[in-house]
Image 1 (cartoon, one colour):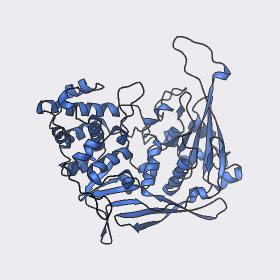
Image 2 (spheres, rainbow, N blue to C red):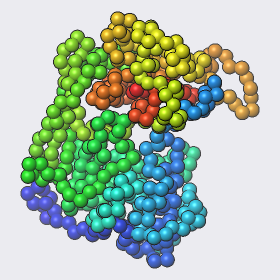
Image 3 (cartoon, helix red, strand yellow):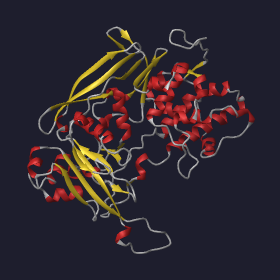
Image 4 (cartoon, rainbow, N blue to C red):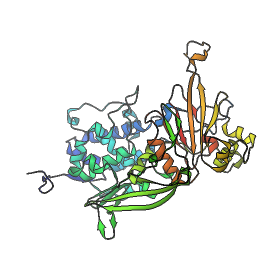
Length: 482
């Protein structure tokens, strides 16, 4: 048949319910009954192995003890991976197993699958990707989506390059786990089947088919720190607005950007540009447009530049979700939350750096930024005392000099030329969530991509902990959104 919009190709497609989908897929590829127990447990073991890697930012963040012996407040990064418990629950759901043989799972970890002829057609990495994807579904949703109809054709067509699990971890047999966007793609492919294409879901925050909807948890978030980077939603129902139903919610036009304003160049090669006044941002209208099969959504922001000129900025929902995925997130503080003397807030820390203009408590300043004896800080914005008195916005850079790791067999004094210099940049634009959204977008898109690592302070991380980030040897500069 002709394959165009007016006369599309007709496909037949086998589907199976989400509960037990993995076991059905094994039957579909003619794996004998006696081998399915092993296959299911190998997939669970490989999924557990994939999430046991260090957090993504561990290549540039150190959580070793500080020189002064303070270890309780050393910042760590959230992994963004599903927990072991969620992997196990998803494994039982995927393969319809009442109990698991944990001895069998332990024996399979980091080992390749058996090469039996009866298993030649098993899409091993595809099943691991599906299991990790199921582990990212909110638990209450997972229990309600047993009847979610998934495509067996799409499962067989899942290739390693489709979900990124072709990339192995350095010096390891383990594959890297899917990130949240990758899991969204996998589940969309299984739900849409022959209808799936990369372009179709690329800008989507929600995809719907067969009466079910998959969407990111971003929809319920206010601040970027509240956006989940490890879980998504699956519910029965389709998006409806004013009596109209659509199968997708996608990003609308976002041509109006903060970067159209002339900013302050704070660093060259690689460059950092800052837009003074971003702290004044307020959320405007949500603009909704209609396509034949999709709602187009754009969120508007209003702000005033340094010369008090009214400015505007637009972001799409999917774009905002992916911005949060590009920033590593500091884990909650480890010290007691009721220890007020141990928690230094943003305002106190900023005041202590303001030449004593408001608070000027040198003891608090020392408590906040006494990280390494060989570090120093510099206020990059505002550039003068008058500006610091008139604005709560701050851009501060700390310069580090790190010592290269020594050979375990040699102990040679380091020469000055062998020391490595790097930087941590801190951006504070207020606790206003709207301002934080714009600054996050700026850090992701106005700086030289790939030249910096990006970290975001979570709501459960105090500034005293956030400013204690320590650099690992030979790493690129870090940008921190406070």
